[in-house]
Amino acid sequence: MGTLRRHRVRERGVTVESRVRVARFGIGQVVRHRVYSFRGVIFDVDPVFSNTEEWWEAIPEDVRPSKDQPFYHLYAENAESEYVAYVSEQNLLPDDTGLPLRHPQIDEAFTRTEDGTLVARHPAAN
Image 1 (tube, rainbow, N blue to C red):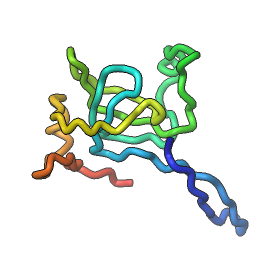
Image 2: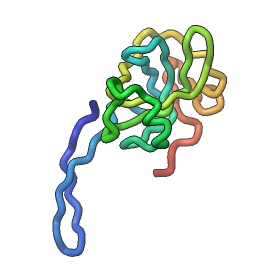
Image 3: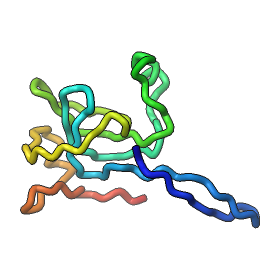
Image 4: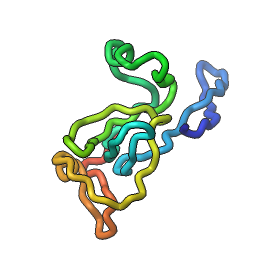
């Protein structure tokens, strides 16, 4: 999972130290699911779970991931279809196949460099 880094801030004259989880994967990175047969490109990252409780509870309890890890928004695809997926960091692996993705929203959100790297057309403001 993402790296934990110590982070110090001053609040009301007192230095507070906390741990901040750094995402393992970045926007534009091609990844695949650890268990299910799909892959995709990351277009957004939430530092911790940020979806609905209904979505969370729909995941079988025995495979439900922890909420305190990065979650990734993917333009995902499998052999049959293209869709948007929301996946915990623990369930993703880098995809090093070099195979192109066919999801139609990829070209809207990214440009491709000569070496095939995906670069966001409109980088996040924060």
